[in-house]
Length: 185
Image 1: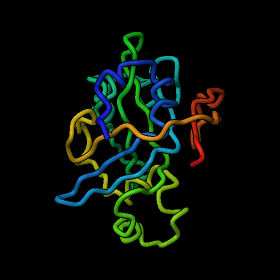
Image 2: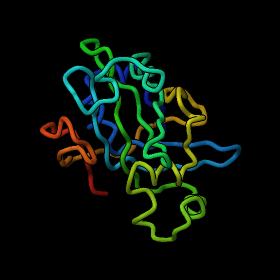
Image 3: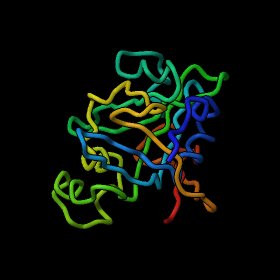
Image 4: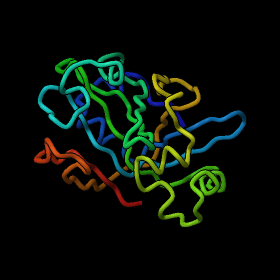
């Protein structure tokens, strides 16, 4: 599968969030490949989005959201979990990222089961913290170039026909924006 080029991420964050559905997130650890098909995403922009980490301006934590597109934004949340995003924004916005919320496991499912300590496949990568744990994505992947073959990247995937849009999950501000996108596969 072809790696998504940087230009893929250089568009409106909401459009990129929809277009990431069906694509494959790949994690390389030594000779091992762990992958999954992206089934849920959420868009987070800048000044028009009070739920975005970038809303209040640049910080040490969110600075990649203001930088080059196609870069991994990995952050630690609730004092115990990592979440992975792809920096994506058009020239209209100074910052933006797409949270990868869920995957359908594809390669190295046994490794994911071991990493998550569960053999319930439907519960393996059905949340942003679950998928990072299953794929061993940590702060070390912060700033990784997703548009090049590296330890973490995204490739082309399935053709998507039907996308469901909902309110984003687990936020208090910007709840009116239906920027949570899902597919069933």
